[in-house]
Structure formats: C-alpha cells, structure tokens
Image (cartoon, rainbow, N blue to C red):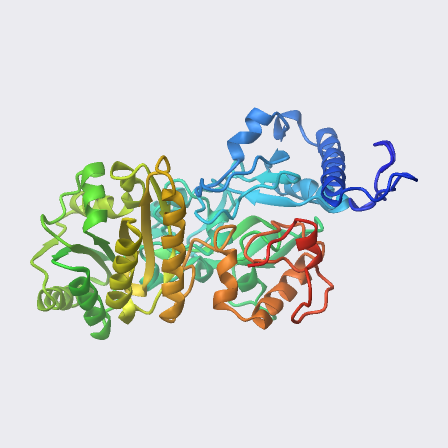
Length: 521
C-alpha cells in the first residue's frame, strides 16, 4: 500500500494501492489499516463540527463504554460521540456514512445481550444526554420523549395527571426509553399490557445515510407498511431513534398484590396455568425458585415465605369490583395447587417490599455467586414444569447452579447461570449451560429471547430457530434500511451477508469470513 497521504477513494474505506514488486499485502493488515484511516477521517471531521466536549478520543475515557450490561463481551470503541440532540446524531451518522465507518447507538448501557457492544474501528453514539420529556398530552394519552429519558422518570412525570408508562423492565430506574425501543423491552406487567411495541405510536429516526425521518405520530395505526413495527426491537440495526411518541396508560382504580409460597416450581407453575385458564389475566405473575429467593433474602431481606421452593408474585389491577372477583379466583387456584402461605399486601409499603425481592433478583445473585450469566428465553406457559426440570437436570449434569427468575404468566424465562470465573473452566461450563437452556426453549416450541434481544450474545443461535431462507428475508429488510451495513453491524445475524448478494445457500467461504469479519456457526 502507498503511504498514508494516498487515501481511499472518496466516500469509501475499502480501496488501496499495492506497491510494485512487494506482492499482495496481508488482507487482515490491509483491512485494519483502511479501517483506521477511515475512522481517523471521521474523527477529524466530527472534531471540527461538534463541540470538543462531545467528542471523546482519550482511550481511558473510551474504556467507560467498552460493554453494556453483558460484561462478558468488551470492545473499546474507536470514537465516542455524546449526542445532545437529533442534529448531533445526524451529523455523526452522516460522517460515518460518507467514510463507510460503522456506528453503534448506546443509551444507558443496561442491555443484557451485547446489543450496544462498540466497534473498535467504529463510532459509538451515546444518547444518555438526550433526556428531555418534550410533551405530556394527558388528553390524548400520549407523551413525546427523547431516547435518553429514563423509563421510570416518565411514569413519575405522568403520575400527577393520572397516567403511567406501562412497560416496566426490572432496570426501569436506570434504563432508557430508546433502549426499550431497541430491544422491545417488556417487564413484569407485560402479561396484561404488552411490550414496548404496544406503546409506541411514533418515532423520529436518523437513517444509516444520515437522513432525519418521522414515522407515525400521536394517532394510532397509521396507514401503509408497519415501519414502526419493524423498528421497535430492531436493536439499532436500522438506524438511530432520536424521539419517541408513546402511549400512556391510565392509573388503575384498584391494585392488589399477592405473594404465594409453594413447595416446588411444579406447584407454582400449575397454579399459574390454572389462573390463566380460569380467564383471569393478572397484570403480572412472576416466579422465583429457591436459589433466587435465597439471593434476594441476602440482598434485600424481602421476607418471603420460609422453606418455599418457589414463590409467585401476582398483581391484579383495574376496576375495584373486577379486582375483588379476580383476587378470590387467584387465592382459590393458589391454594388448590399447593400454596402453603399466601399474603395480600395491605398497602403500598408492603407491595413495594414484595416487589423488591423480585426486582432486585438479577443483582441479588451477586450475594451467592461471584459471577453469573443472565439468560433470556421463552417457552409456552404449559411447558414450564417440564422445562424447569430439564434445566435442573442440565445444571446437575454440568455442575453449574442455575437460579430461576421469570415472567411465569407468559413463559419468559430469565435463568441466572452462576459460576466463579477464577475457577478453571467454570466460565466455559456456564456458557454451555446458558446455551443449553436456549436450545431447550427452542425444542419446546419457544424462542431464544423474550425481551433482552439477540445482540452479540445469541446471534449464533438464530440458525437453530430460523431457516436460512428466514434469515435471508430478515437481511433483505435490513439491507433496505442499511445497504452499506454500517448501523450496528455484526449484531442479531450470525453471518452478516453483504447487501446485494444473491440469497440462497452459499458454496464455499463467505467473503466476510475470509476477511475475518464474520464467523460461520
């Protein structure tokens, strides 16, 4: 390659001359050099157009952003841009598009699938400073917010008007609305109220070419193709959301929270199925097994029933008369299926204490294990007893403890795979168990993710759930938005196909595989 004063052609980062008489350059070295030169051009360009405090190049500061909530994957980003508004986002994305540099959006960094994992040769666009609630329209039950607005902050802002934002991930006190949109987050109350996609009516988006577009608005169900549906849950692969219009939910007249203790997860699962079969749809039905209860007690002293092999946290809400009838049904089905203790929260303080054990479960396992993997899979609700037994068998076979915490009402499992990274081979065994749990979910008619996303962590399992034709179709949608594959590349799909390639079974090695940019699973 010639000296660095001979750049790649305008708008691309992939051409370089080869000096005469030296032979072909090493492909990996060439790829790294071209990428570094492209990133340097983007860095120089953004340093000129954005305030200095918004462009981070110092390696120690860059390391702050090397991972999201899934700390097993770490990459120091090549450049970080702290966006303050949609124009900043568009400026950063246009520079990346011009020089074919990959970019990744990041909110609060609470994701658990490596969806916000940076690129070493790319730009990380951080949205956490975009935290303005732009409008609360109580009359139309809508709010317009920046993507960095914290989930719980929106509920607190709308409560005085008698409303709240229904999606409530366990991390709602720190996670951002933009991240909820990217992952289609749910939370404990998604059984009755649905996921983020059910509460988004409009989005402002910076496309991978840097164009600012508006989709939807305050009105429900806009005509035409469901682009909102494609974007919610797309994990940042179709562009960067810069504003969100959400549906607000009226605060219920009555709320009742029940804590029920069972001897086994089988009994608790049977009670769950009986409640749903009776036509009762609680706002939430959450289950924790004995190991998860042990961790929660050590962390927050939640006072769950002593000796319980499993507990259910069941919350009912709505009109007072309806809740009273549903409460009687819930108590009857719990007792009929072996509940040895049931408690009804007498006030908001008791309700908060019951939920505190469940909401703290992920962090609480740090009290009983130095390291853990949070997994996320979905199964049919009726398969709960069978799958939990299979998880226990897998756990015993590999000598790896698993604490089960999950949304029992819709079969969304969140097994916590415990290990000690200081122990030789422990991390590898934990990864095997975590992967085995996903395979159990698929085998039982379920999915590899319910609300945490695919990200970097689960891409290799996508071919186990989808055919090659399915994946080709998904890639066609992605390529329609991002033909240059620069918007959060390498996520969701196991082998990123170049846009414009002919679909179908490939013979021989993929060009990206040969270049070291993709892996075949």
